[in-house]
Image 1 (cartoon, protein in one colour):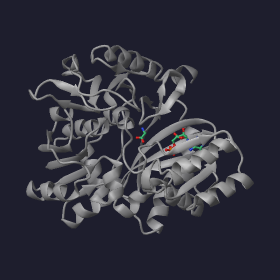
Image 2 (cartoon, helix red, strand yellow; image 1 turned 45 degrees about the vertical axis):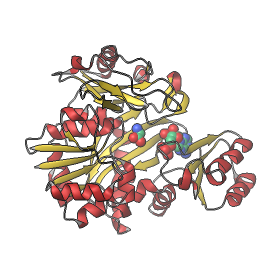
Image 3 (cartoon, helix red, strand yellow; image 1 turned 90 degrees about the vertical axis):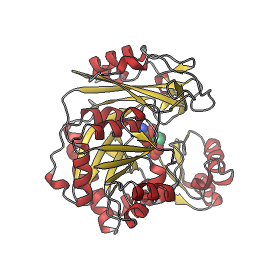
Length: 426
Ligand code: AMP
Ligand code: GLY
């Protein structure tokens, strides 16, 4: 099969590495890819939002399967266009990707189908949101821009003043662009967060392993929110009881709700959960693998990725038994110092060869590119590399991952030193 992966981050590198293990994959392309993905796929210089060019490329190369990794093209309807052109594609259509594309939609879906989540209100006008804050709000409170905002459109406000400023930031100043044309104001919840990835064919849902992300930039969960600075899988806090509850009240009900709304969901649903004192609640849905969740979950998956994607497309996921190795995985992100605000790019990276041929330690490229010489690898983003290690347990995986972070060097290398520290509390 000829397979095209759309995206350019660490998640797409993990997807490409997983696809490359499939005996069915003869040729893998990635658009646009990066210097690490180039080890397993041919990178083509087409951006993930260049829909016409992606469709033409897929037709011209007679691609047998497209896997869309990123949220923007999914929410923008790339899957619909590829399907109209007769190309088999793994990922939700536009009318299902709205599950991530609009927080107001996802909250209304959860309310309608009794899926546990924080209480909320939706606002189209800043004045109405302010009026609500003055009359009915309890603090802290959570403000969310409705649309996609690179994981940054969520503000947790401790006081009325902060919340008023937040409404202006989102709806008046449009800091997150058109994502802030509507907003959700919701109840603040407390508890441990868990990410759960799943495959679904629109009817059946199969749960992958759980993971725990570290969203803040600095040690001790300080600093700004980022795309994710590292994570581990499985989460020791995702117990059998939690799993049973979520299967009954969250996972299958979400798939059924989307089907009932005539928005059958084919692809990956990522459940962002909070384990509150009153039980698990949905924080958010994503319609794709997480980044870096894919980097700790996919290396542990025993199934043939291509086969699972095809089963989803063909509506026969019920015939697939998803299996994961008993090993644990930890991923530490190596970022450019200053991320997520301001940082330098284009710096040479050394030591990458130490990962070659390793089956237990991986270096997934998030933001890298080749220099003019076509060989030297340069930094090309805020998140640069994701160092993943497998181990007999989380502690071993963590020790190995941190050891391997020392194998690579670049001038402004920055990482958190407490990824997986929560393991010690489990
Ligand atoms: P989201 O993009 O919706 O996952 O939100 C980003 C982060 O904000 C989450 O990972 C949580 O840490 C936090 N968050 C979102 N919603 C809430 C909430 N209702 N209560 C407390 N924290 C929240
Ligand atoms: N790591 C969180 C996300 O991919 O949205």
